[in-house]
Every structure is written in structure tokens, then in C-alpha cells.
Amino acid sequence: MESDPKYTSLPTNKWSMFKPNQQLKRRGLLIVGEGPDGCGKTTIMQKLVPHLQTQGREAVLSNWNEVSELYNLMMRRNSTGDLNREMRCIFGAADLAARNHYVILPGLHQGKVVLLNKYVVSALAHSLIRGVDRGFVSRLYDFALEPDLTIYFDVPPEVALERKLRSGIIGFWEAGIDQAINVPLPESLRRYQEREFSQDFINQCFLNFQRRLKLIQQKELRGCALFIDASNRPECVLGEATRAVDELVFKGKRECRNLLGTSAIF
Image 1 (cartoon, rainbow, N blue to C red):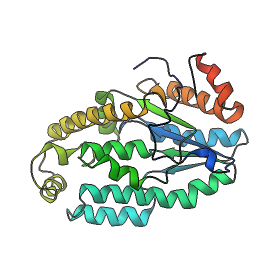
Image 2 (image 1 turned 90 degrees about the vertical axis):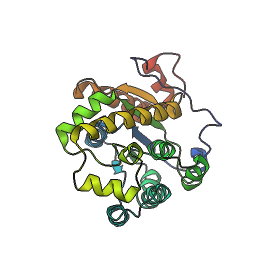
Image 3 (image 1 turned 60 degrees about the horizontal axis):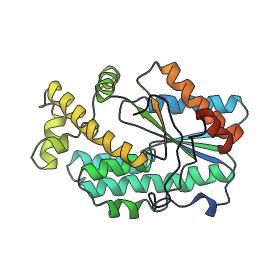
Image 4 (image 1 turned 30 degrees about the vertical axis):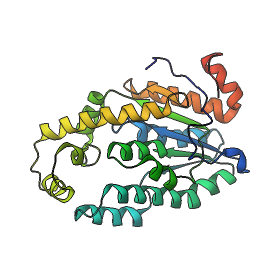
């Protein structure tokens, strides 16, 4: 990964699941934050909202699994072991579809900057790792809009692990425990919930899973995202993200290219 971030173009044949922006007469901008679990994207995306608001631009942030009714239902099925890999995909797509209808599209039509913490690439990566057919995922998310800017917050899995351990418990799914042991999902969930796994085992699962997740995310986003080294100090990461967002929001894509030289292409 280059040490300097780069804006690059989105191949026209790569993201067929995205609806072309030009088909929508929208006035706002869609900015997405992606990256491994523990990369710090949630904190940065949250701070971008007041930054934009203080400069007179309306902004709204929407997070993954934000629709509480769907999330609670998913967690109930999760607790009983009734949440298979396809059902997880469907819940994720339903959550995004609801937010698309009630938050994203209204915000864009009102001229707001809509910030999304995680988007289709995260859903796709988690699904592909678990053996879900790519076509199945693409059909679920065929309503998704193409972002005006995607920022990938890049960190080594070891750094992400340290951050997760400082902030709290490592989750079952983000550690990929379902992929680490050859037992039925309800049994692996039960063992995790009853704390039968050692912390060392969970840590190693997290590292292995996040390495695989990161490979898929970067493969999908290479050539269509701004990569930021999120292992730097938080203020440096925020500064890079803020500068890119400001260039896009207040100057437009053409001027935004100048931030990174003539090789930067939208």
C-alpha cells in the first residue's frame, strides 16, 4: 500500500451493483468510510459531521446496523443459532435499504453531505469470506448508490487488535470464529457466549480473519478509493480525511484531484 493516499477512477465494469449517480437528480454528496474492524473509521466519520456543519454545510452520518428493529431481530436469531450466512446478508441489505429510503436519499435530495460508516464493500467482504455467492450479494445490494468518495482507513491487523482490546470485547463475527472451528454455528456461538474460548484463541482468530477481510476489501477498492494510513496519530488521520472531504465538498472533484497531483483521476 502506498504511503501517500491516491484518488483513482472507478472502473466502469467493476461495480455493476451500484446505481449510476447520474440517473439520480441529487444535490448532495455521498461519502463512505471503509476499513478493517478496529481501524478507527467510526470515530473519524463522527468527527467529520461537526466539521462540515461549522463550515455551513449540512451533514448527516449513518452507521451500519442502525435500524434497531432489524438489528434486534438479527441478534435474537443470532443468540439462538438461527442466523446462517445468507440470512446475515439479507439483514445487512435490509438495514441499508431502510436507511437508503429514510436517510440517504432524502439527505442527498436536500443537498446534504451523507456520510456512511461502512458500506457495500464491507458487506461483500464478510459474505465472500463465508462462502456466499457474489451474485447473491450483488442482487441484494443492487439499489446501492455509487459513492462520490470512499475513504479506506488502513491499519495492520495487529494495530486493530490492540485498539479492540483497549475498547472492549472482540465480537464473534468480527473475529471470524465461525470460520475458525469446524462445528455447527449454534455450537460455536454457545461456546463464545459462555466464554469457553481463551482470549488468546479469540485474538488469533481476529488477526487471521481481519487479514483475509482486508485482502478482499483492498482488492475491491483498489483503483476507486482514497487510502489513508490509519495507524498514524488520530489527529493526523482526521486531518487527511478532513482535507479530502473539504476538497470534494467545497471545490468539487476536479479541484480535489490537485491535492494528489496529476496522477489522481476520478
